[in-house]
Length: 186
Image 1 (tube, rainbow, N blue to C red):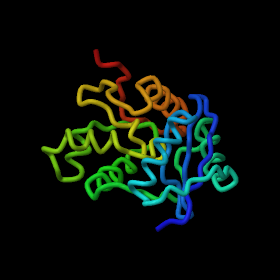
Image 2: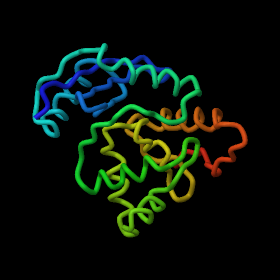
Image 3: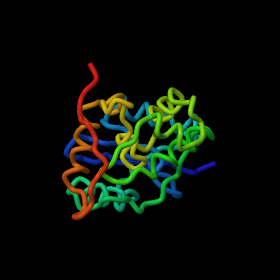
């Protein structure tokens, strides 16, 4: 059992993001802050890490916040911080596939299902995407509908659109991204 989960609140261009980490790495993020977000964190740590020992310790998450600063400034295309990932076996398989989606590119839920050899599991892939506790770091925002539409994102479609636009505008020179249609599904 982990002894303590440390957390901080990061102020991003999208608003507050609460970040939590164990000694093994970043384990959870959620858009927002305050009592409801802290309750979500406590529920999550109790379920997955089997602890309620959660403490505000921004000094333990400095490297994570520095890398987020670089990401939002458009100068970081990959994160190099350790992740401490909790989820079901299937979720972890999906999330590992999401980590393979290059910066500035998108894939459909169907693409992910095919890549993990589960072509009939498109909805299950969507649910795993929805349960991702490490959005941005496990880039579920890079997953779109088969028709190219922006669909579902825990932080909301406005945040998903912002992240995709940020990445598209800051692609390294001489890299042609896979076309991504940025349209909202009606």
